Image (tube, rainbow, N blue to C red; front, side, top):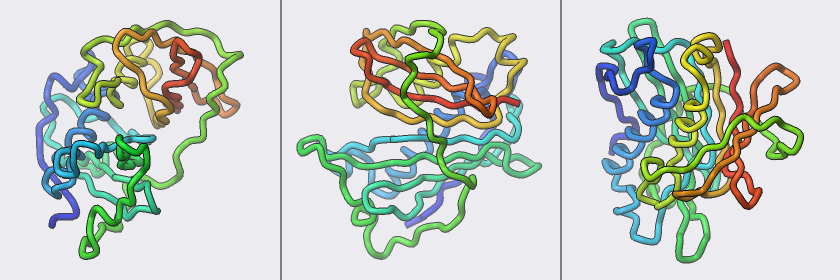
Length: 242
């Protein structure tokens, strides 16, 4: 089995923003798509694992060195890391002719929806699977407090049918797309993203209204809480700007 998947592609127009460069939300889409394709190749998709087994993303970190231009040729790559019991990182890179343009990683788990228990991931890959030891981006995931009581309300976002995935809840990448939709083009151009971390806390569903709150951390990073109608936190996001 191939422990690493790579594919060459031209950055499509549909993945670009008004600056004609790969948008940050679509980085999440690209990584999610190739992870899904690799899982199918490895016969580890949710369909392969059984109807009660579902892949669950718990957090993602992306480091942006530069954003490739529309129609620029890049190499997209992904590979899973050996698990620590029930959680494992999957790494990603987008490389251009200058090297790594974007690097990322997502912590994944597999949940048995019938029992509510997480499964041991290394058992799913099998004893003979040779994990790639490369690391896409160093450092740990950001720790983001989910207490946003004193943060200012930025906006509200109603979850739409286009945000819902096959799990019948808000898709992982849709949270980032929803957050970025709250800013103007001018705001996004003036405050580019160097790093973005997101931690998924609770599922959200079509029709729910998320209250998005914003605060500035002591180190200058911007942190966002996406809060459900019952006051539980759906996701927290940390953005280090250029």
